[in-house]
Image 1 (cartoon, helix red, strand yellow):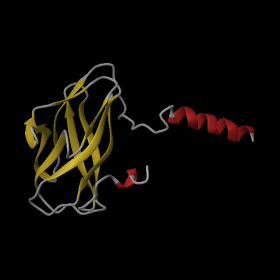
Image 2 (cartoon, one colour):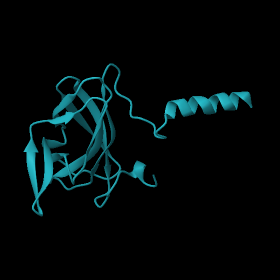
Image 3 (cartoon, one colour):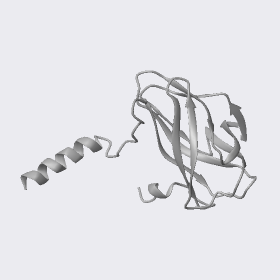
Length: 158
């Protein structure tokens, strides 16, 4: 019984006060990425990658861009509401403040795959390399969800 209590206490310390496990940064990196996913799409189209970028460091960093062999290019965008009209503009970078996270999704700031080179099929995963000003390059695995997906499958029921 005493071992069970020790294990339960250890688990609580790992989970932390927020009740959620945190994404791990690659060894030596201050930036981590959680819940990276994209919707399935036909060849030649565009799709958005949803993800959460977390800066576990003491200094702000900048997401400068991204690449994947699955698309001609990856663009960083923001959506704004200008007097009831939604406008999208390309960004040169996205600031990730120290100790903060930035959620990238279609309704706001996001990463868009342009010129998808082959169909993205639900159930597969694709590679993505993010480039940061200070943290350098970070490789991310992006899961592909069904076309009409509104949230990542691992987040369902949370």
